[in-house]
Image (cartoon, rainbow over all chains, first blue to last red; front, side, top):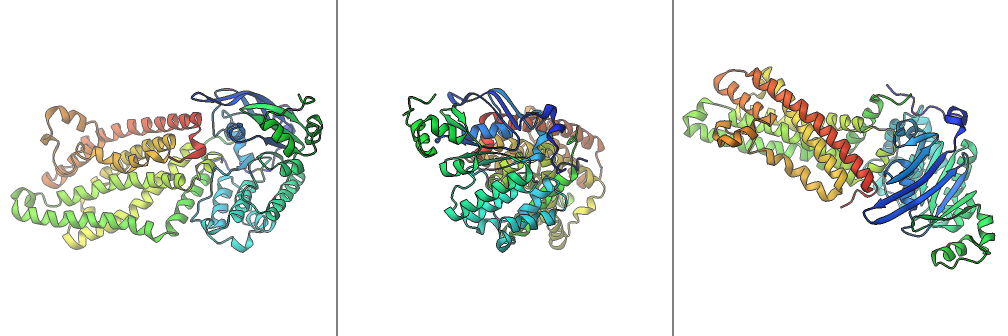
Length: 264
Length: 268
């Protein structure tokens, strides 16, 4: 039986040719007549935090869903940790995880029960200790034995993050990780993500509308609009290129089509 | 390559998930007992009434109540499978599962085990009630009962797998299929009457359904005292085809759900 899903993260050398964490080539997704994602290509370096920016309907969630294998592309190719998706999903799903507002944890089960089930699905060794550690790290102790449905929005987000970290993933995909959190909790979650990336050499791809969050966390930003990549660079260089002081201003320029003359 | 094959720990995790859910909700547990008990009481009294007024039923003691219990195995087996699946849709948890290392076959195997557990919770007390109130010993059917049970549960899983695939592909808007599809089999499976009652052309359709063989077999056993092994083997062969076909349909519907992005929402 396959008991080794939660084996310690493999070194980059263990994967084909020290490949990028994520490689996307000419990815397109068409729903009936809507081009949700339109021929995008990018690579994400291991150990980096990349932000996927864009307004509603820009194609961020569909892109992440295709990387996870939840949605099949119309055309193009996705490779995760050196393995083509979804063909070799079984080889990487145990090494990655995600958090998204499009899914919930079972409401009637307690936080501990939920984490136990996901820990078992990911074959996490020393699961009790792992849950205790996550509970301490994410401040869940107070409501560990409370049903998920009885938690506040902020508490639920922390539980979802604990689920996303249960297998100490090498690759973490986050869709709006701090949506519905108060500023204090959101800041606290960001700090935790930064620490996790540093301590685990993890790769994080996050989709967000929160420009402050992206500016603080990300080494690189991919801006999407109507399914296409509008820009792709470090936050500093993008702000300089658009001649703006904040990413929010850049975002508004892109969203409203007010692209600076110096911009690409 | 690693990760090949079926992992018992993942199946166990899913069974634990549904067990936690059952134990956390007394209405869910009560519902498992309520309908089967109601069924056996209603049909048990009907059996007594018509046995007192019709010579055939006096001779064929237990055919109605036996049919009710076997029908409940078929119906509750499918519901037990499908409701566990629906719990994931209702909880919007399917995305979490599909993104985990859990494989479709492991998910389906866990649902099969859960259908057995839910069935046991509902049907075992039902058989006790039949014995206590109507002196009908369901287990008195003896070894043939194993053949009846296996064939019915296999059919219930085939239907359960297929309707789960439909809900997966079409979202909760297709939920009503879960509750109603098995009833489409009811008149054709000849639960309470022999196949010979049907028009000749419809008998061909009836004989394409494994439960028909089981109910004919039950009547043969209770009325004539003859166990029809040939009927059980024929039902088993059709069940094997149905199980493979339903699994293939589930995989095709899962792929279609991935193509259409249904796994992200899961709503209507």
